[in-house]
Image (cartoon, rainbow, N blue to C red; front, side, top):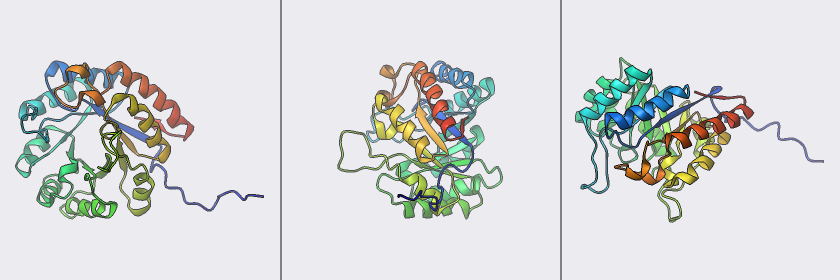
Length: 265
């Protein structure tokens, strides 16, 4: 007779809530961003994300609206009652970004930009605004956790780790999602972990399945890119959902989360 595995530890979600960070890859215009914000607000969610400064591999690609994008995010936040999350790419931009948004993101390319991490820790030390730290393209979990200390040692322990896929030999997806990072992070740290399901997918039809996996693995939050017209997006159009597709997915995720005794917020 097989004995039940009752002695295994539980490395699931830290609370009964799973936060969704949703929004376009880039803030392109007030009309575009407000349309997504309205969708997110109508679904009863709390956060909208978007890029004002964009770290693009090709220097000729859209680089973001900069401060104008931050102003659009601030206006959307006030109109729709949402919290905002955007990336701070450079130490010189941290105070500016901090002034406009509720959460600062550190992109994968900057996971080990230690001067930037220190600066973010210092600037957010009093406000304790959320800092979402993405895992590097080839960063180990040990390196990722070490990077958090550059933020926490400078005054802010409100850090969320974000798994966004690794660069491997596999080419059928944009990146390889390391779903095992969820229980490992819960085992080795006190930080909550987010799964960015859009970047490893690379195409929108894979986003639902990766979202289901994130909930099953115990992720504390999920990041999903949403755009009113993905075919005309200035960055990462193929992986972004339309508002209608996103609304349908949210309902599915709520059903799945309920199976685990959790709720989507």
